[in-house]
Image (cartoon, rainbow, N blue to C red):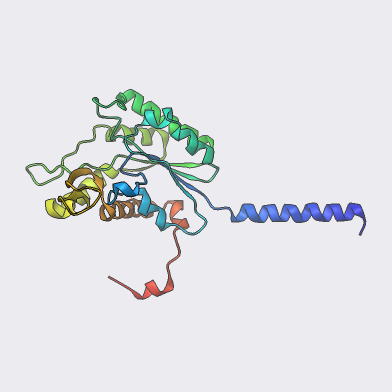
Length: 257
């Protein structure tokens, strides 16, 4: 074989290998949000962000970048460089979950954004994700667990309506987790819903020696159930991300409820 033919052969083989690698490339899942989504330190357990169990739903090869952080708003997530980190990972075909509101809407917090700023920030995030040829998935904030006298959980997120409007304006996938989680925990009732949040009596857990009663953040059970609710909504929409779920172990197909 001449040098020229050998060279052409090597180039063709390399091209075929690159095409094969590209064909096998899996999308990534990227997550931008606040404490209800974020990965927790061991010192904070059993507090758990729903993004943690959500990551276990997907097949090998699906990379999850959960950049959500406690206390962040649409403004501070960008100003602290977290959004830039997410964009550096983001590639065509990826999925980007965006869930804010808890810290944007509280006027006494340093992370407060006006309704106009909140809307503009969400639109900017969506446009930047689209520019990467990735798919944004917009979520309203998770409910807080405050029961009213009528036995229903109060709606405490005025910015949820803004998220809904932004989704409609931009034409992206929207999951109204404020309403969904509020209905879900209301149906469980006061006692059973508390088992899903950070309610721990004193002297039961080394991380919380004096106990804790937190109606915003989930424990392991609550986070898993919320993650399941998100997945259920994706299935109802026949969203393409559902095609990337972990294959079922055959032995589990023998089980039923």
